[in-house]
Length: 186
Image (cartoon, rainbow, N blue to C red):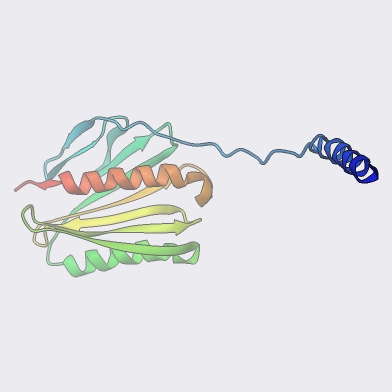
């Protein structure tokens, strides 16, 4: 009989002890999930080349053969610059690569992705800059005889890679779209 009452007492004790309310702990800080809509494509036509770009952006001529594709919602832009090749292809490529690697001091890593499309005579590279650098992406493309186009992404804010990563990735995809739809004019 003593063992039955002891077991009963133990069960009641365990039930009472286990029914305590959990202590209230602060919840972790929420992270904002940034999603940007996939825009339809618009055409940008110049005297030397054409390509398709995201129509959610605003394309404008900035000067002689310099263009800006602005993304006001992201507070960023893709800056493009066109040059005619005049026996200086090696210098133009070296300058473009040097400009990309100047961000190495602030970057955690720079990933170079070559691009080759012999059917449309487009050769170049996309540089993905990871870390708190001023520009998260840079690229150049050429037909290797006449045309040379460079581009870079900049945000109108102090670089904080974790915060701008969704927007930087979005613009890198738009750059890939620009490169893939680029066509040179004679």
